[in-house]
Length: 202
Ligand code: FES
Ligand code: FES
Image 1 (tube, rainbow, N blue to C red):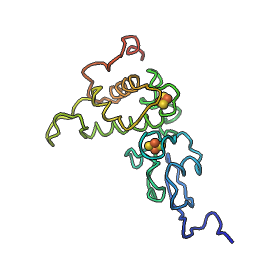
Image 2: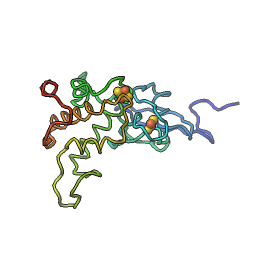
Image 3: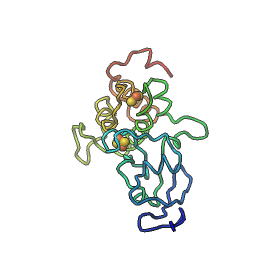
Image 4: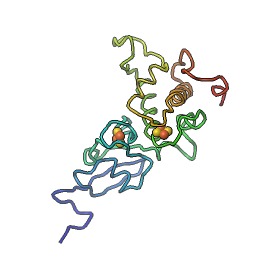
């Protein structure tokens, strides 16, 4: 007789995940990815499956505040971790400034990549605030000043998130806006293709 769903077995274990502040204990197959557990077991379908092989970033979530492609993370490896998905980004019915910027500045078309883009953007702001350099940062000496979030920096830092609709110009613009809202050092110039009217949208 098969063991009850809540019983661990040779191929499954009961794990505890805290997702968007809510604690869940559930049995999961050892081979299940975090992405599949979020979508299929917890019904958190905001996190999208694109390539399912770590290439597109559609499945990006925050694990302990760090961005993670959830299709490459086994759920059992997330045991005991705090996870934030797109469903947990807005607080008290108010959009996060990153979400608002994507909305105001058309940082999407079909929206499929958007949850991953927004989770990545949240991490970009935190990584930048913590002084992390990127692959295009000119001066990476430990005592160097944190570079401003220029469009070039944003493009590089967001390069793990693909958008098949090609909304990149607006995505960069939205992250720039969010960075300014968050108090990050202002960028030197508007992103390529930014028109003054769009930039004026508050
Ligand atoms: S679905 Fe995970 S990176 Fe594409
Ligand atoms: S908005 Fe359609 S894939 Fe990015």
